[in-house]
Amino acid sequence: MAVREIVKYPSPILEKKCKEVVEFDEKLVKLLEDMHDTMIEADGVGIAAPQIGENIQVAIVDMGDGQDVIELINPVVTATGGSEIDVEGCLSFPDLFGEVERPYYVKVEAQERDGSIYEIEAEDYTARAILHEIDHLNGILFNSKMIRIVDLEDLEVEDELTTEREGEEV
Image 1 (cartoon, helix red, strand yellow):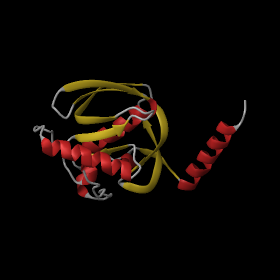
Image 2: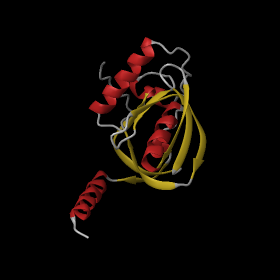
Image 3: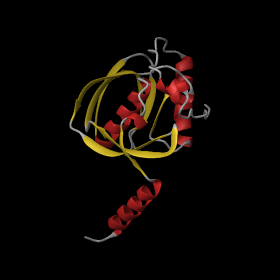
Image 4: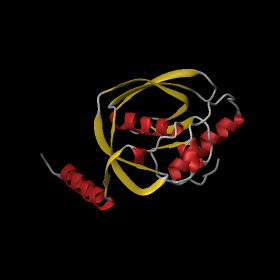
């Protein structure tokens, strides 16, 4: 496994629609493992293949809460519901954060590394992360969906206030 260099905006590969995966082989397994190592090293929540220079429909998302990392190969969004605005960042846009409106719920059909098809449903933050990564596979970047840029200092103050509130007794 290897940590790969993260492609930064404005690299053209980030705005291209990715090609469908047709070969489920050792090369794909290595790519998935490299993506995982790269995401962990960069302290990311998800990463898409174009972010490491590969123009194919592969993304991974850390489900959080001690759950596994999901691998999304040739993902297709089959349903969405609700809507919410929250702050997002992106490994390809260091130090850029902004408010983005996305569905609260998503249902996706995708393939496993062996080519088998599965379906996943997610809500809230996990749905947001999945949709962010699927956008990457379609050449859509979060900066094109931002409603408002959020200053990094504002995020740090918000995190400090949240931490203080969590430490208070009710």
